[in-house]
Length: 273
Image (cartoon, rainbow, N blue to C red; front, side, top):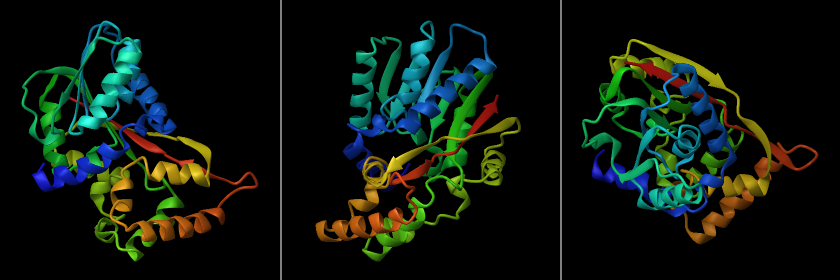
């Protein structure tokens, strides 16, 4: 990844590292990744690479159940990795090795039975090349599992927030295109990525991930995920204006308990060697 793009992707995650793994849908998704691994192999001893591991949700979920397997977990964010190591220590896991590493510049030719990449492929400007390089690092009959959000995910929040961010001066919001294929929010987009990566054997599973959240919880979520980068571009005054208008917009969608359903429906893509 080019340094400017890398720094842009890295900075907001440094800010949210301490609270990122508190988001429930990441743990729910990690549990499903573990289920997929169990569906595809009965081996008790595996080598696993978790790409863009964040605070370690996938690596920890798998390592806890796969005690005899060894894990490498990489991320470009030192803050995320520090939290991941803390989480692994708290769970008394010693089968995960954490490394600061840019996924677009993997410096090892080590081969793996399983490679996972959760909610990161759509951030990468070189996603086809990255996926191709990950498949090349698989052992025979190995699999890559990557996840991405469906087009319905985070509705109606995105439709309310992004115009507000653009209105109040977020450069990233102005440049963001919700409909570009690289967001991987449709099956046809995932199929396109696989074609560009020369992948011929892949499966797409759709998993519904939903639960109710208060508007305060929604705002906290925005400040603890990649949206943070856009919010950081605002002045303190404009941040408060965006917050006020966002709350007003979200309240129109709230139920009698004051909650708006979080939709984090996801695609789980299994790519075979």
